[in-house]
Amino acid sequence: MIYLDNSATTRVLPEVAEAVRCAMEEEFGNPSSPHGLGLRAERAVREAREVIARGLGVDAGEVVFTSGGTEANNLAVIGAARALRRRGDHVITTRVEHPSVLRACEVLAEEGFRVTRLGVDRQGRIDPAELAEALGAETVLVSVMHVNNEVGTIQPLEEVAEVLARRRRDGLPVWHVDAVQSFARLPLAPRRLGIDMVSLSAHKIHGPKGCGALYLRQGLLLKPLLVGGGQEGGRRSGTENVPGIVGFGVAARLLLAEGQEAARRMAGLRRRLLEGILAAVPWARVNGADAEADVAAGPGAGVAPHIASVSFPGLRGEVLVHALEERGVYASTGAACSARRAQPSHVLAAMGLAPEDIEGTIRFSLSPLTTAEEVEGAIAAVAEAAAELRAFARR
Image: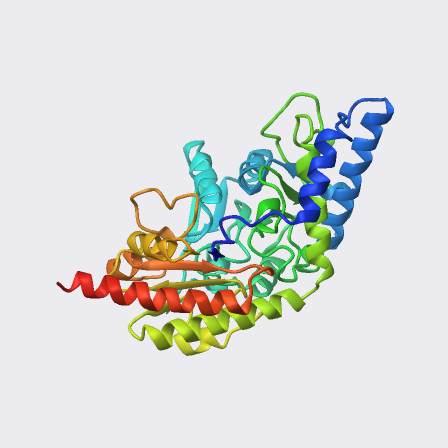
């Protein structure tokens, strides 16, 4: 099996699986219990919180554990906007955000908030000048992702930071960044950039599903979505998912320890994957940047090191995905959260791709576990499957 769908989910690392097993079978106490088993569970949660915080360069008390990236995004967008409602009713986001951000903004719109959705260029990147123009006295929240989950485009966060620094008054607007696809892969410094909230997810970095986190700047107002026992400092009630949190901490510690070496390896493999596909299937098109520039891209070059989006005009992406699966290669047509729905990719549509290109798009996503041999195998499988399907389509 050649697994190239790591933006959907990743294989849990053996060390993570063992830590989760231990937390489920041995150290299974409730962190709120006063006895020794509960205290050990509380300590395990605290240690994981400290690992996540170090990865972002923030204080451990600013990390709130959630059930995943979707809840973290919902809590950030809806919770912050509702808390700041008396100070303004305007929210700004982009047209290429994850559905958990876009749908959260729709919920706010239903509550009377005005929502501005910034457009993007052919590379999927916003224009900071448009953000500056959209900002107003009533703007309370800006949500701009770090790495796009479909095409890998890195948004210009440094420039966004400059725009917001010039326009902020009395701490507004607050700034949220969805970093689900970038945490532990690309550097992100919330304090230096002035980012107020950052969303993370464990299962994107070889941790368990069902666990995420939200960095929440100390002192920031937020209305919780879940109320009850007041866990997570009253910001997210509910008994902590100790096994998931422990696994998240172990996965983050292992990946962060590699620094940018893993990103460099993935960038090289991504470059080889695209070079091989374009050589074998010259009519294919790389999405997210100019083909030549994209192939040469690496960490910090505007494209994430682990995501590659390729269109095969004239083919149906779903059919090609299954043809690749028959050859032992696992990829996807786009975001896993919407892959089974009929509507076309909102990201590719926002980038201005033709319907034929959107329909024939495949996303390949790598991980630090991906090998050069797997990439060569994937190139061969893509070449064979694309040629076979194109010949069939021409009959």
